[in-house]
Each structure stands twice: as C-alpha cells, then as structure tokens.
Image 1 (cartoon, rainbow, N blue to C red):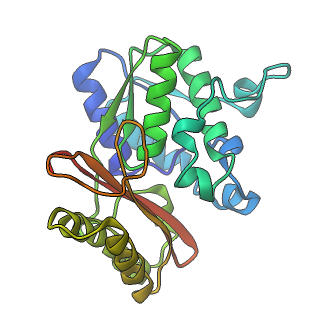
Image 2 (cartoon, rainbow, N blue to C red):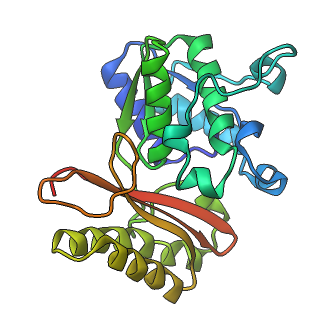
Amino acid sequence: MGALHGGHLSLIEEARKQTDLVIVSIYVNPTQFNQTEDLQNYPRTLAEDVIKLEKAGCDILFLPSDAEMYPEGLVHTAPMDISPWASGMEGTFRPGHFDGMARVMYRFITLLEPDRVFMGQKDFQQFKIVDQISRKMDLGSKVVACPIIRENNGLAMSSRNLRLSDAERQAAGRIFEVLKEGAKKVMAGQEIAVVQAWALEEMKKVGFRPEYYEFIEPDSLSPLSEVKEGTEFVICTAAWVGPVRLIDNYWVKDA
C-alpha cells in the first residue's frame, strides 16, 4: 500500500531471485480499513516509492484506480469463506478487514496471473488467508512468505512506523522483546495463559495498549492452550503505541 520500506524492498529482492519478471502494485485499498480516519492518515509517498522501486529492480509498477479495482457491477464480496482463518486476532479487532483484503488480493491475482506472490510474514494471518485462497480456488499462484525485516531495535518495519515519534519508535522495540521472551517462557514449561497475562502487562508497563497476544498453530491459526515439545507455533500480537496500531509475530519452528 505504498510508503515503501526495507521490508517491501526485501520482497522485490526475493522475487528477483525466484522469477524473471517482478511486478509491484501500490494501491491503498479502501475496503480493508475499518476507520475513515485511518484510511485518510495512511502515509502516501508515491514519488519516493517510485525511486526506491527503480533502484530495487522492479520491472513493472501497477497503480490501479478504485474504478479499475472495483468496477461497477463487480460482486464486492470475499471470493470464498475465509472465516476459519479470519475469525480471531485481527478478525476480532478489525471486523471486515480481511473481507476487504481478500477481495483486493483476489483481484490482483486474477488480473496479473502471477506465478508467485511474495508476502511479508509480519501480517501472518493475512499471508495465511491469501495462501488458502490461492490453494483452494486453484488460482495457479504460489504464495511465498518472506521473513520480517526489522529496525535496529527489533521493531518490525511498517509503513505505519512513519507516524510514530522518535521516542515511540524506539520504545516500540519492546514488542519484539516480549514476543521472544514469551516464547522462551512457554518452552521452559510455563502455561500459555500465564505467559499471555505477563506479556499484556509488560506492554502496558511501557505505555502501550495491547489488544491480544495469542499462541496459534501456524496452518489452521487455531489458538493453542499448551505447547508440547516439538510443537511448531506462532505468537501474534497487536498493540497501540501512541496513535499507531502495530502488529508483530514470532514463528517458532522447532520448539
């Protein structure tokens, strides 16, 4: 959605390794915003984005209008039932968000017919939903999850970080620390419910307003009540830092 940063550019780098032609879309999709204010305040830096894309080796920039993405007469619904993956976490706190996201991603994939779709892991639930849509609807596009790119203090890179003050941006590195510490606690035998309560309190201590801190199974996105030895899991969290809502996750593949 523009306001490109190192995380976005890493997707282009990976795409260049795996494919012959790299297409980047920039489109601030109105159907996935829950609040008009959030849509209006979303950073738009197209001139700077174009320069970054040229340097990164993007072959084609696709800049659709609302009329092109949502022409009159188009059925404006999610392409399939995504509720099994969209009902918790972001789906709880941003109702309707994933319907809009699924709608626009389905349009992108059917319009551009890519062999591969490169998505950052930061929006883990979003990545999983797009992967399921591509698989179950047999769209012919492999969805590739790419690692989260972080700032020096561990904060996951996000276009929304531009709206943080310097102090807020530095403090926000605590989110990643709480994710890593929570994983260690659970793997050391502490109960998930106890760790969840600890994590939410830790974020409140530094002035954040956390919404959730969930342990999930990475394929079904089902909440976990315990982690057994060898269990793969993802910890996902969302918290407000000042006026900005940030999300992050930590994927433990070998517990």
